[in-house]
Amino acid sequence: MNTVKELLSSRRMIWKLAKNDFKTKYAGSYFGILWAFVQPIVTILIYIIIFQYGFKAAPSREGYPYALTLTSGIIPWFFFSEALINATNCFMEYSYLVKKVVFKISILPVVKVVSSLFVHLFFVALVFLIFVLFGKIPPVQFIQIVYYIFCAFCFALALSFLTSAIVPFFRDFGQIVNIVLQVWMWACPIMWDLNQMLGGYPLLMRLIKLNPFVYVVEGYRDCYINGVWFWERGLYTLYFWAVTLALGWAGFRVFKKLRVHFSDVL
Image (tube, rainbow, N blue to C red; front, side):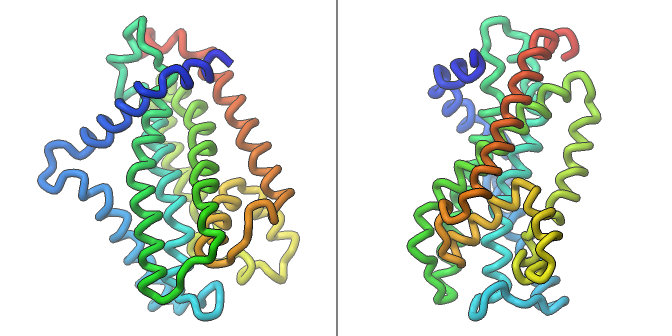
């Protein structure tokens, strides 16, 4: 509870540090912050070429090109994976702040997640524009994209407190998180459509949906393509928030127990 109070009382500091973190991440490079947008765009184009033109992947919904299915599902993953990777290593990166007695180190994972959010908001708008250019204006349910951004933010933050607290004591844990994320991406219906692939296998579909981030990926597609309100997925919504809150509670507990030893190992 004290950690939550610290975060709420440090809102301005979090915002200031997040903006500074975003700017300094690409400082010194010739194209600067453009690299934050170029790499995801190139990745998306590669996936489209491989799956749409190479494997002839079918669209998730009649009239919607595969490119739209892919982009609407991959942008939340870009945000989540970048936020988690950056936040996992935040205490190592900002070790000079961790050693300061008066600094509230609990804000550092939040700073990293907020910093990743800046690029994500750009891609949310960009994908909307791409849909319009394809002649597929997203349904009115698109307004709930704010809710699903909040879902992705909270889920990333919940895991970040857990992973970032472990790294100072086990430096290789950051690499393990990277590997897990690579496998995790393919366990999400990002390159493929959940109903199209597993519609005839209800048990397997239930198992896939145990992955809480599937809720976020499907939620983004509901905003851009399917036109489904989040409350129409009532039980799944409750499941997602139950898992997220449980992970957040565990993360805060681990962080609270280990934070007093950070300065000894950094």
